[in-house]
Image (cartoon, rainbow, N blue to C red; front, side, top):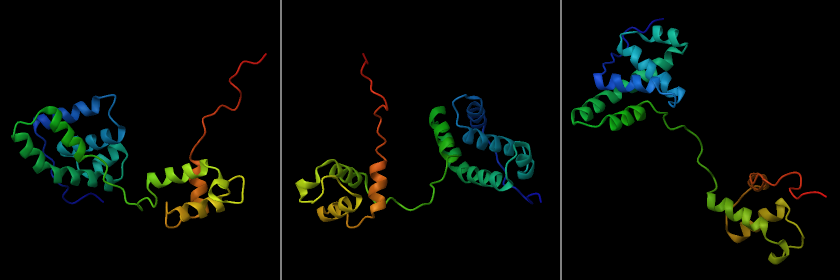
Length: 178
């Protein structure tokens, strides 16, 4: 079903020129190029369904980028009127077409905490009064909580942090063989 009244997109000559440059650049991210193409076709008067069919996109995707550009238009026009440079205007347009922040749970442990956990694992367990010669995840988990590095942590998280270290040591000796 076609959109009854898609938002009108108007571009200044400077905006159109900069957007066309973005599409032609070999270094432009393809997601950004896709969004710019949507805006350029919308400015030519194509509706969301036509644009979606031309670039094999979902109509909702086209609608989203048309709306995002429409919201940014007033700000872009006012800034452009102040005599902003092409480079600054281009950056503002790219920011307008950038990805929105993604939802998700914030990290539970800070980078500093992870580093301290790994550093603890590099130390000798007997030096902390532990009755083992090598760390087990249970002993290490207990030690980092005891030290106050974290309030609580699962053995699985400790194991995951230690595995993240991806050793880059070669599987074979680099020394010459005789």
